[in-house]
Length: 395
Ligand code: FEO
Image 1: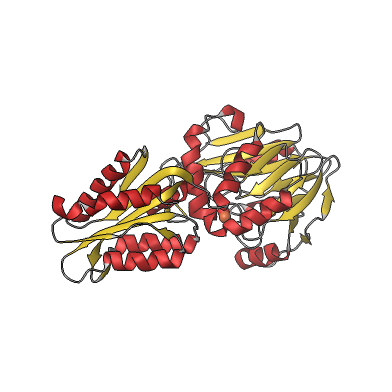
Image 2: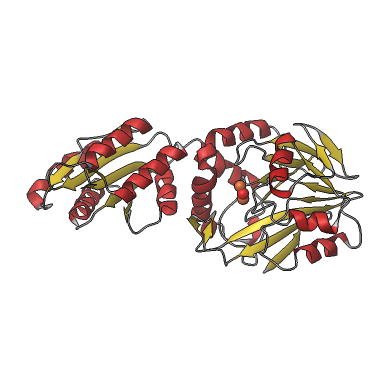
C-alpha cells in the first residue's frame, strides 16, 4: 500500500495509494483509486511537506521515522490544508511536539479551525526563504488552486517544485511513481478528469500561478496526487496550461442527451451520424442518466464541439441535464461551439432551457435547435442534416 521513493539524495516521496474510497470529496468516482503524496527533505534541518489523508495507511508515522533515521523533524510545511493532505497533521504534532509548522496567514486560520490553536507557527510571505542547510526553500502563493491558502514550495537548490494540488491526477501509483516509470497514456484521461472536477473552476488562478512560475527553472514537480515529474515536467505544465485556458481539441465532438422514453436518444444518434458523415471522427455520445457528471465534465473540457439534447421534464430540462449545465456554469468553462436538440409532448421546456444555458455561458450556438414533438420519426429528423453542417462548419 505504501510507496517511498527517493527523488534525490535528500528528498523522499512518500505516497499512499487509496483503492478503498469510492468517491473523492464524496462526489467524484475513483474507479482507478487515487494517491496522496507528501515529501520529506532530510537535510541539516528536516522538513516534511504536507501529510496524507487520515486512515489511508496504518504506518505513516513509522515511514517518516524511518526516513528521518533518528533525527527530529524541524519543520512541517503545509502547502495545502484540505484534509486529504492534512489528515495526519495531528499525528505529526503528537510525535514531534517541537516541530515548527510553516505556512501563510490563511494556512494558520484554516489549520486552527480544524486542529485548534497552534503552539508554534512560522508565517511566511510570498518569496520568503527558509534554509535547511543544503536546501534553500522559497514560497509561491497559489491562492485558489484550489483553496485560498494554497502555496507552492520551491527548492532553489535542486529546482524542485512542491506544487500542492496543481499538476495532480486521479489514479493510484501501481509500482511506478515518476513520469519516466509509467505509461502516461493510462493517466491522461484521469488527469483531465481530476483537473476538471477539482481545479477547473479555478482556471484563472492556475494561469496566475503559471505566470508566477514563468522563468523559474523547474527540474522536478512534486504534486500532492499521483505522478512525480522528474523527466519531463514541461509536459504536465503544458497540459495544465491548456486546460486552464479552456483550450480544447478542435476536432472532437461530445454529444450528451437526457431521454426518458428514447426519442431524444434517437435524435442524438441521428445527429451523431450526420456529424460523422461530414468527416468528424472523434465523436462520443453519452446518456446523461448513465455516465457520471465527473466524466461528462472532462469530456466537455476535451471537446471543442458540444451537443446537448434534453427531453422536456415538468416544463424544464431533464433534471440530470440541468445538473450538468449547472456544473458547467459553476466550473466557468468558456469558448465552446454548441448545437442543441430535444423532444417534448405538449409545452416543451428542454430545448428552451438549454438555450438559456447557452446564453449564460457565452458559448457559440450553431444552427437551429431541433425540438421534436412526439415520436422522433425519420421525417421529423431531416433538419439534422443542416444542423450538423452549421455545427461542423461553423467558425
Ligand atoms: Fe487534494 Fe484540494 O486537496
